[in-house]
Length: 186
View 1: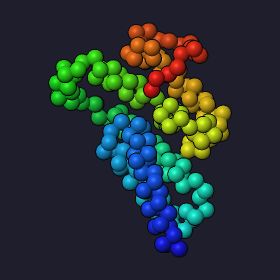
View 2: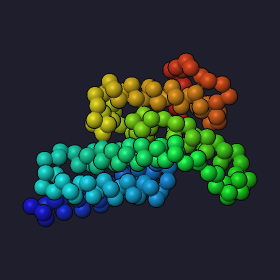
View 3: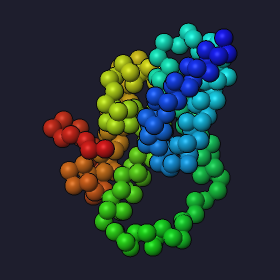
View 4: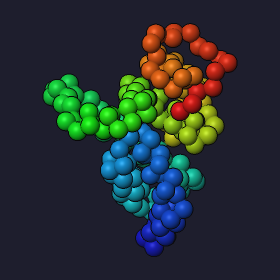
């Protein structure tokens, strides 16, 4: 039975690890943290042992494990941010001088994404990066499809208050209304 579990995890790793790593990177915005999230997900899958054979979509289950570890990590980081003031990196200013517009634009987008609640961020990444359906997003977030759509709508609304999708720049004003004619470019 252990051989079946090892074989299933090896198959998942070889088939899905690059996609899982990209998904984790889009959640946390850091390649090192993304690799840690994927490793934690594989460890939690391995701990399940023989009960993994009952899991129908192992790749979605791995996505759910990454999501759960990300939420846990996010909560811990949020607690630390409250306890310890955030320090600026000294070389951050040097990086911005190279290509100031592109870096500032990307930085503002990441800040806008980081303002989102973890479920909203996960839903947006799954929809606009992986092009998943509401039902598939709901499977990963362990909620109903209507709740997944709610996370998407609220996440987009929050993003619109901090990011102007048309100009790829930070919003100069709060855009409280939903604009259904505009396609988000995430």
